[in-house]
Amino acid sequence: MDSKQIRSYFPILDQEVNGHPLVYLDSAATSQKPIQVIETLESYYKEYNSNVHRGVHTLGTKATDAYEGAREKVRKFISANSIEEIVFTRGTTTALNTVAQSYAMEQVKEGDEIVISPMEHHSNIIPWQQVAKKTGATLKYLPLQEDGTISLADVEKTVTSQTKLVAVTYVSNVLGVINPIKEIAAIAHKNAAVMVVDAAQGAPHIKIDVQDLDCDFLAFSGHKMCGPTGIGVLYGKKHLLENMEPIEFGGEMIDFVGLYESTWKELPWKFEAGTPIIAGAIGLGAAIDFLEEIGLDNITEHEHKLAAYAMEKMSTVKGLSIYGPKDAKNRAGVITFNIEDVHPHDVATVLDAEGIAVRAGHHCAQPLMKWLNVSATARASFYLYNSEEDIDKLVSGIVKTKEYFSDVF
Amino acid sequence: MSFNNLDSLYRSVIMDHYKNPRNKGVLEGSLTVNMNNPTCGDRILLTMQVEDGVVVDTKFDGEGCSISMSSASMMTQAIKGKSVDEALELSKTFSDMIQGKDYSDDMDLGDIEALQGVNKFPARIKCATLAWKAMEKGMKEGLDS
Image 1 (cartoon, rainbow over the protein chains, first blue to last red):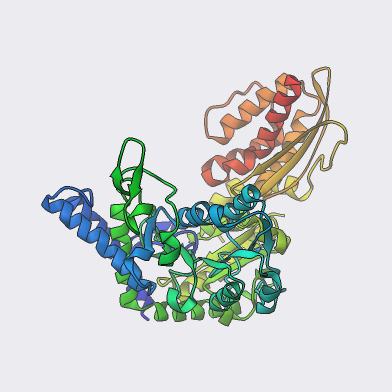
Image 2: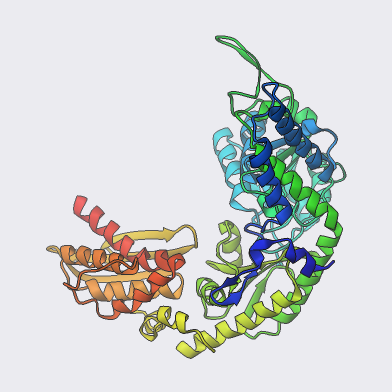
């Protein structure tokens, strides 16, 4: 994979920040957008902006075709059975909340269990806390191994016949851990529980096949995979979505509206009330085309290589702690670290002065920070446009940060 | 190594307060305020002993970056012995300074002036104001009750 050529598709990367060429290492927060996606959005707004599923005029038809065409691209991208299983949402958070509100609030009863892990993003914790509080169900956490991974033996022990729902992230946004989703789903199903997957950090980096994983629901966001912000996807098995009530009501999602009663459109539109996220969906379709042309497997391999290279280089820096599995094989391109005696905010400020963008803070994973026994960390995350050169700059930036703080004391 | 811009942020007096915080600890049984910066995880526990409208003593505890912790250290040092009104006025001056606005020179800022450089780092302003916000909240709640 030619990361230099790929980089040239991303106009934003060709700039200086604080007098240095930008090194963007915050793709786990949001990815940059290739020119192909930017131009697709531009052409939608310049040439055929129109509302969808209504009216008979030419632009309306063109917009509807592009919007529904994007749904088909998403279906193929995750190997879903039919477009009825692909609901466009505002993002992963909305998708997970839809499962919580529409499915779990109805199906989970007092005394039931919901099982999640301590490595979840807040968006895959709080919806289940709310369901547990309102239904009287118990929220249980899978234990983590010392390196932050989940053992299947622990899943077997934690998931019981009382468990109605298991919700786990595909890839941790902090530890970079890739979880054995297929195996966890099998254990959930053995106990007649549904499996919910937060794929926000998975879909951009790993080829997803929802039928092979056999997950019941899966959620991801467009903006972390080269697409626009404000668009995401909820995948759900048809028989589950069919029996779920919408949580938003209004235009677009109705079949027939009377004075006192209304009926809903068929799947997936009954979950898409209001004018949908037309430009966002079309932009996501263009992002999928872009990623598929490069090949998800090539992207995965590229990131594994970068992670391995970064782990090797960073482990030579004294006083640097890296969280998560030591073996790069079990990791996505996310490296979370701390420098001894330097707070991560200060690390991020000094790196920014060198043009290097990293994230500092709790990464919307406060329970995991507690588990790691830290208040905050710094995080570098890689994507298809990053290269070993970026990592060299990061490592030299880290060394400079250490020197800078030992100088000023 | 050229970090001229950074040097205006990380002044030695700031690093001194970070490494050797003044008034670190908890005053049991006094006015207590907990405050977090939810976007980054910084947190402060500020305790203030206010008698006859004067801050007789104050201590802080918590965790955070060099800017938030040094600012807390300087703030406790500055408000000790001041009246509640003076402490709030100082907070207003500090807030103006940190946002790069013109600020009043009625009060001697002392060490606090070292934090002026933060105004060139918008992402760090919230770090610097955490302790001051906690103080204002405590005064307001203390005066209400």
